[in-house]
Structures are given as structure tokens and as C-alpha cells.
Image (cartoon, rainbow, N blue to C red):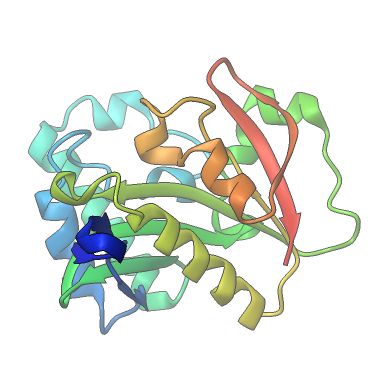
Length: 208
């Protein structure tokens, strides 16, 4: 969006977005957004909910469409139980972005990774929260959608009692930044780098 500034010059004005929590009521919007998600197609943001990958002998017999359907069904069951948290970002009531967050117990996949185990991090007695995933409709990228989702997620965590929040952003604005967010975006919200996390990412934390 553009507006006229001093001396008649056109200046860029960041668009305003609204946000909603993922829930039974907003499942339809989540579904609408993820049906538009073509790259990485059928994840339905379920991976970090699973402590480990599903058995290859089981998944190997399924077609891509069947795997996608299973992921969607598993995600929906978690939402119905109140065991999946996230923020939907809207532009004019249209869902255009997503940010997944949740307590450690809800997103256990991180704990199973050898990289995370080697860090042997301590939460200092605080409840540990995680921000694991982002996704933005391709038509709306580089316009602050992910940042809006991050801000709303931090606000929701605060309302739920707060604690120590960690995330795993990419150091550069390229894949896998589309999924994990970028380091500058998190630093702007007060996160600090705790450790290197693989070749392309870092682990960041802040207290809320």
C-alpha cells in the first residue's frame, strides 16, 4: 500500500493484518490456506508434533495423496483436542499466513534430533515454548506477514502464562527461511542467539 508523503512523494506503508488462533472455529481457514500450499505440499504442519518419523514400511505403501490425507487427519484430531496451537494471519478476512507455536510437550520432534541433544540446554525452571514453523502465501511474501504471526504468537504465549520461548530461524533470507523464519525477524522481537543449529539455522531464545 502506498500513500502520499511530504513534497508529494509516494512512500510505502506496511499493510495491516489481523490474526486469529488456530481452533475448531478457524480450522476451515487453516485448511483453506494449506490447500493453497503447493511446495512441500502435504505436511499440514504435523511433523513437529510427532516424536519421530512414521515407519517407512507404513508410509512407503502410501501414495503422496494418501500421506497428505493422513497428515491432514492427524492435524485435525490434534486441533479438536486443543493440542495444536498456531496463528493464522489475515488480509481482508483472507488467510494468507501461518505461525506454529506450542509448549515443548506438544512439539517433541525437536528433542529427538541429535543436534538438539548435543546442546543439552536448560530452561532454568521456566516453561519451555517453541515456535517451529511459518508459511506465507506466495502472493504476500516479503510484506511482514510472518512478523505479524510471530508477534501474535508471542502475545498468545504471554497470555497463557509465558515462559522461555525458543525458535530455529535461518541465518539467510532463503530456504529454509520460508519455514523457520529469519534471524533478523526474531532479533527484532528481542530473541538472542544461543547456539548454531545445523548448517543453515541458529537456535534463539527469549523470555516472555
